[in-house]
Length: 328
Ligand SMILES: Cc1cc2nc3c(=O)[nH]c(=O)nc-3n(C[C@H](O)[C@H](O)[C@H](O)COP(=O)(O)O)c2cc1C
Image (cartoon, rainbow, N blue to C red; front, side, top):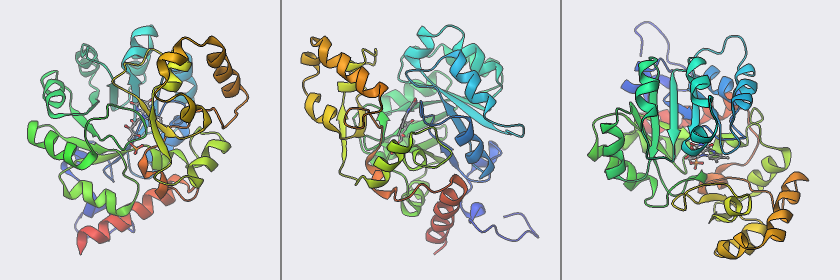
């Protein structure tokens, strides 16, 4: 706490970490760069609430899409980050260059093994992050010069390796490396935020719990589906990636809300790959926003999402609650 200043309503000074202070953040919260969900508006709202807002470029990421979302950051954007997907960087010429030129404070590239991007980003004076799933991978990323790791547990939403749950993974990664580690996967309440900071995380990387906020790019149907879902309503699947012919590595299935398409094809992906009619039906269903087939990425913390709360309100109550728990 700064001497002479009253404590803030959200208890930010109780939560702040060496990493969050070094990054110039008031609260140790980063929004996950969720493709098609975390655009400039969400990033700006998280930044205004004191965290680090990230623009996410997912499977459909491109220079044009990034330009569009950068324009949504607004005039006093302040600090923000950009998160990219390894195979999208490889197939979209100019995407990494454009991200660097936008002068974010953090760039993440996840889901790859070629770490040559790290030096390019660091040479531009921008900090680097990547998601890891076990201790060995964490050590490799540290050796590549990554500045901060995201220990992403299997309960998280969207793509990710399914190897360990968030808390045991965080423990293993903290033990393996000496750089700061953020925790991700299933965090969406005051208690889970407090737990991760107590366990040694330098901050949290929140996806699902911010996806339903009105500032996100999620469709209204998607928002309502998240609010209605229970924690047991997610499924791990490769069916959507196979159905859309996206080159995701088999190691990274997606955690989504269970719908008819996921229930029908999960475990039958090889059959789906040989069925052009079923794949065409998926494409047509997504185009008309049919919720029986449209994928909504969400983690097991989706049960904690009970309303489309504005970012400031949601992060304010998460942080105030976590500060109370940590201060007791
Ligand atoms: C809707 C959604 C989209 C996502 N898209 C991306 C993405 O484009 N790039 C990425 O690195 N991670 C993406 N993720 C994964 C997040 O980075 C993070 O691992 C995850 O959200 C953490 O778990 P949580 O959802 O339980 O908070 C996505 C997650 C969700 C929920």
